[in-house]
Image 1 (cartoon, rainbow, N blue to C red):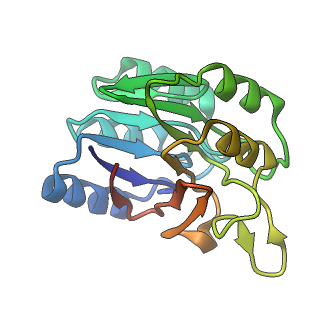
Image 2 (cartoon, helix red, strand yellow):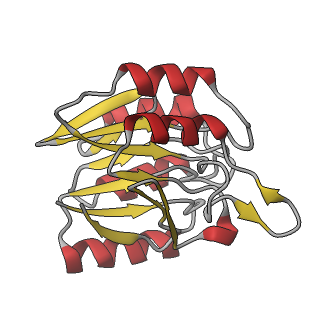
Length: 196
């Protein structure tokens, strides 16, 4: 399965245009946006319409700069966008679990409860979060050390997904790491093709 993952495009059409070109070139099965579609809610309607125009299924969670309620409503009215915050999406042998927001929180019992109760044993799990897992190459900011979420790390260690996609930390765009056998990535605003 081929996915095009991206994050933190922050209302900038130039990044959408790059995602559009990569969609045409690589023809992914799914697109995944791990949050911050907007810059503090700016141009939300425009960005949702642009993503919908790709004519591919796009799994979307909100970031800390998005209006989660607005994105949820707009996704529900779109043809191709699936709002995945605290939801799951099955695609063949794969189960995608989404949890948006969080910003710089250290823990989230709500995230843990949602992810752990939706762990389906006969599926290949992909976690989609905005905040990265704690103490990895994806959450280290110069001078601040690690700023990820320990609950996400805990969930990854427990349910052992095949892939974790996050964003939020611009300094770690396009970085990859592993927690056990789980590949974790921050695909950045220009997106990343992942074969899973």
